[in-house]
Image (cartoon, rainbow, N blue to C red):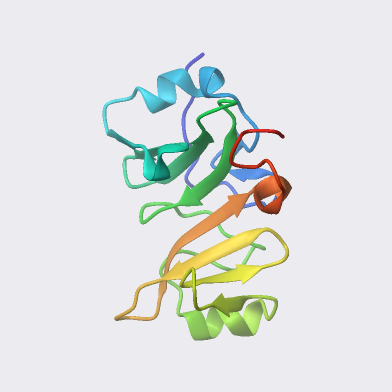
Length: 146
């Protein structure tokens, strides 16, 4: 199956972005993660991360092979909640979505609606938007028990 990233698709918390769904197994996305402009890494030894052509980043649990987080990167053009996008000022973003709270430890804005937003420390613009699974905070998450 030839899978393409739709960089204009909406960013949907708890579901996915770019036409890719959270909880997908790495086998389902094999062609995508093996494509030419992909960089792989293994952060913390428990997860696989694939950055694909500055469009998206896919984060898999190494134990169960499932996608737990997807991040919209620099070239992504879809919007979160039909109004928040990469490059937007964080001031405007917070006016549009007051549920975003800054987490000093993680250094991201987080919403209980299932979203992380990372900003550029110099421009204060939205750098990345991530959606993730509900089980991210559960016991057994790291071991893939979800």
